[in-house]
Image 1 (cartoon, one colour):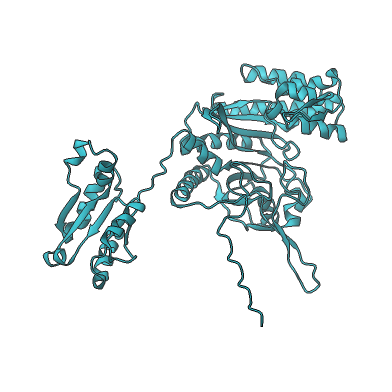
Image 2 (image 1 turned 180 degrees about the vertical axis):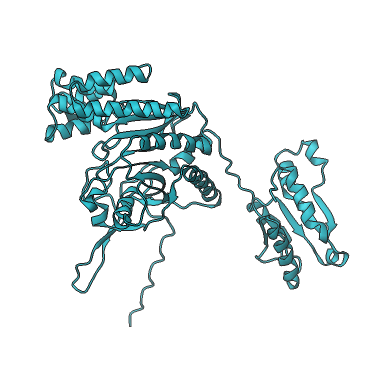
Length: 498
């Protein structure tokens, strides 16, 4: 009988486009989410946690700014008795599930409905540097409010969120535009419907990548891209393309000049004039709340998924410089965006429901704070209670419990206690500030040894620091004074909140 082959061991590796997050990273993200949630909560938004899985039918067109039907999501088919079950998919954002939730529960929800949601989303896209298939979003939306006061409020709240997490004024700007203004420009051009209009929209979406000259070429005959390939243009004459370029480059020295330029760009278009008026109202509302153009500004160059939004659109851009992987200076760029999408709920209800919202890219915002050195990735570990006698585990657990009840992270060493040096190596690997030691002799005398591991690390870093070397790195105190001494040591380093 042939010997049965053993099944090969599975590879211990993360799937392509995914990654694992460890202690400090998870803690940082949780703290950021908590800060953003606090701002959302102050503005009167309620938390919503919807299902991570939706029906493909409910999700609708996948990835609002990518024209790829039935692609971009992780989907599977449920099997029923006939083998024709529903298609389900992991959510690709937090907005499409909101539309379903509101349509399903609208009779029980207040109008307007103000909700925030935080959590992972999944996109079945080609991964790249810094681009993963699973990432966190942090959204806030108002459903059922037609007034642009709701859009202005979102912009103000976004500014507050950025400052709350550590992005100071001067390092960010929230730029606001309006889809209706572009619709007015297209109307003036006679491009209200048809393939040529769609081609113009796709070209405008490339403005942030190719700039004014690139858009001019793409609206005309075409251009060579960075790889040397020739991209066919839309075929407009210079006169035909002029209104689009006037729209994209109409930003002036202040809001008044910008709005004047936009009025000229939309000409006699009624929808265009309505869009300009909405931008003017937003500018007035945010200014009245103390948000000047250094924080929120009207900028017609903002083009976010133009096929998805129906009114105001906004984007938070970080303006400070960082070094890229080749050591070149560049601005960090966008970390958040949103806008008005009045047609999304309509898919379920048949009636237009006004809605506006914002999404913050949490992982990208964390990366920005790291780039500026504004986060502390070193997380203080727990106090480690070492084990000198296996038979006295109850004593050691009692010490850890006392520390925990006082609000201090603590754990008993649960590995093999035979080698005491390995216990201290473990404490170092855990970034522990203190080790507690009590052998048989200390037990008889009713004392504990408290080892200052932070001091030991500082001396190891620079043995010439006399100010550190002169300080004791280990203390013997009565057992009933253990907690007090631990607090005293941690307070020296500013690490005790108990």
